[in-house]
Amino acid sequence: MALSEVSDVSRWSETGWSLVAVPVTALGRCIGVLGAYFRHRDPHGFRERHVALDIVAGLIGKAVSDRDHGQPRVADSGAREARSFQRAAFEYANMIGDSAAMREVYEKVSQVARTSATTLLRGESGTGKELVARAIHLNSPRAAQPFIKVNCAALPESLFESELFGHERGAFTGAHARKKGRFELAAGGTLFLDEIGELPLSTQAKLLRALQFREFERLGGTETLRSDARIVAATNADIESSIAKGTFREDLYYRINVFTITLPPLRERLTDIPALVEFFVRKFSAEHQRKVGLISKAALTRLLGQPLPGNVRELENIIERAVVVCRGAQIEESDLPLAVRAPVNAGARLPLHVSVERLERQLIEEALQATDGSVVAAAQALQTTVRVVRYKIRKLGIDRAQIRS
Image (cartoon, rainbow, N blue to C red):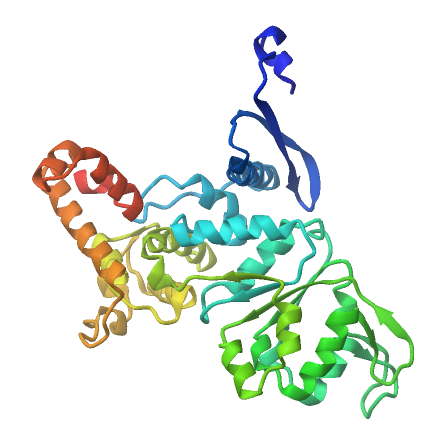
């Protein structure tokens, strides 16, 4: 839509207006273009405007994709009812959270998805590296093509070449027919190399050649094949230390480390836990046909006080068990595993910012409870400003409605 279609064209004759437009994709294809006019003299603001439009375009695309399937009911987890706009834009890939750390992840996904750049995902086990890899694929022009996953740590060295590059009939005992490898199957799409840091040195050289030249031969074959698969690799290993020890090839590291996204551990994004709990409660209630839609404040507080070394995967397992054993419509603290209900080891110190956030949450919630949810009265009680209290409520995901009830 042009400016002249919105209002009298003479009103838009002044200089200084710029147009930023991004494609809107759904179900693997472009369905339209989202454009917005900005009046901004600072050219460095283009990146922020582009990222904002990208997020809105993603939200529109998700709405179109889900139109025929309906939206799931939003369960009240006792944390917050409203979903953030950024979280909703990426929830189709189960990437949930609106903390500063996750917003940075979303921005990087948006930056790299529309390119074919090789991407390295780094982070602890359970932080959601495969979800990010799928989000990159689903937001790329390759979305309609295959997403092929290879767990490098689970692939026996003797089968590595056959699994990745395929084999011809008779290549070895038991090879009764030609088999396509993962590289060939991922042609036009995305090849996800999970746990790449666990590859033995002997297989790293074979992988390097395929990544460098995008050429390979099936085991037992002579025909040179090519694959334009986009490579996304992931690791929870300290590759730099492995390079220093001589257990990981430096040239392979440079080949996969074109664009890096580091996923934060859950202990660095505690404000995302309520939203994650809400999502998992809905997911497992539907999966196990249970009528569980809530989690008590005591149970949620207990979860917020746990270190959760297994990150999102551990939290997911905890909530699934709680949904299964829950006797009512609300998960209580007694429904959580005993290990979660047990006091946290006093010797396990939390990072300073985590301890500060927990103390702030406790003080603000107590002040709101004492003032029947009044932000103004709570600010007075805490001897701070209303603006600061409102900001902290949003940042910490405090649900005023539940406190008043």
